[in-house]
Length: 197
Ligand SMILES: Nc1nc2c(c(=O)[nH]1)N[C@H]1C(S)=C(S)[C@@H](COP(=O)(O)O)O[C@H]1N2
Ligand SMILES: [Mo]
Image 1 (cartoon, rainbow, N blue to C red):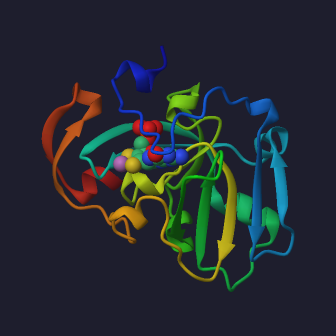
Image 2: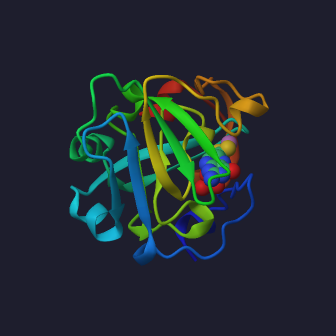
């Protein structure tokens, strides 16, 4: 069993579980405000620099999980498509195009934000957003869209799936009680620093 599952990390698929997803057939489109809109196949994604960050995914439903997430920095994929200066927001679209969410470019460019493909050295399973998902440790988990197929580069913000259903547009984290998935789900008081360091 994969580590996230073993620890009992909740699995959220508001739009329904996507079923089996194969990375060999995966592609990720990056389009909008850039010079070279590109549909990256798996090999092209793997040819970009691969990095690992130790970070938390934290849900507004008050649980948080830490680990070593592997993947691609947004800067590297955005440089590859020639992002335009006018771009201020990234909009993520998940497999099937039913789930989307948008974040400021400035947050995508922070140190621990990632296009994640692995957790603690194991490929992400479909349950947890494989083959590739957004990991945005600085904002509530609903901004970390799973199994993404498209990134739109925009000069405006669009509320997405959960934002249209009442979650905040900013996704700003708030300190407070939180289940620590790494410690058997024990409720602890966690601060913004706990979430983002
Ligand atoms: N496509 C998609 N991405 C999604 C969601 C979802 O329902 N569908 N839920 C979000 C929410 S609310 C959280 S907290 C995290 C949970 O990630 P996990 O299911 O891998 O634990 O995924 C986010 N990304
Ligand atoms: Mo969430």
